[in-house]
Image (tube, one colour):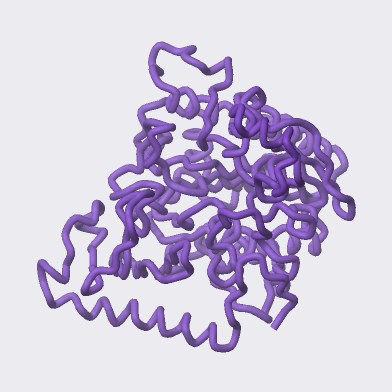
Length: 455
């Protein structure tokens, strides 16, 4: 289950002020990660999770502002491909945002079936503008969003593997409050169906909360005295929807044999249109990479009898790690591609408590321009470039900055300035950079929208 822009400090079990009893119970039944890292926007995070590859390698660091192909090229091998090859049924429900054209949809990337949004919920507000509707009616000569044809308004879609996607309804502000409810309806029906057929399955649930334009479901809109604002109402709905999925697993009788992962694709904050949210003690928000508040997010994993219950770990894990980790858990590591760089690490031994340490010691963060922003090694962060907001420039400091996250989680004190004897940390980051540069000499990075067919 992948949430959209939920902060590190939004859930009760992370110190959030809105009660989240279902999520808290899920965390208590499994392991809660406090040092889990994603990428700086929706598309790169989803790409990293499904491929185990840095988005800079697969041309998925950004979504082009002009209508053109983007997302995963068909050559990429996803977690859904791997599980499908291993005999699992696969389905995706909700937000995709990894390609909006035929050949780049979920059913082209290993999923047997899909219902949801090609892109993101920005599009739900488009038809709310008279100007937009008039342009559609006038036959404006260009598509007005990625993956739309001329004269088309934003739609919800469904598809099955081997078939073209079909529009099933409008994506607009009328449906916006009910999107996550409908996503969960389809996901829970699928869970029941696969369990009844005794068919192993993988379900990727892409929620649309919390992404503007936001609308609260009527059941949660100012319906509790302890919630005064929209953000709190949405957190309450998220908790309820997560609970509905967990109930479906319980009702199907498969809880003991099902791995559940719940996380967020990005941090929260930085948008006046969705006021509220917490990234905990970390500096920054969604739009201020590479500070920790921009890409350290909540994540929990539950697998009864295998993943320890009640464990809270500050060991480093990244969204990149899920593909090799699930492959390791299933004994399918031989299916992980060897004809391309895989940046994810198999954390299965750590998550199942066979080892105390995660195999991940560092994580590199690239910007939307494919250039390196920072390298984090254990609790040390080297910042090569940074930004202070959506409408602010990316700044390259005269000398790379170094922060000690163990003493300074808010990244306020540059160690190069406060004590010069930390420059050895730069050499650690330099080794990581050198390793990456060596890899792209053999395996060049794929360009955004490129029809790449292999090395």
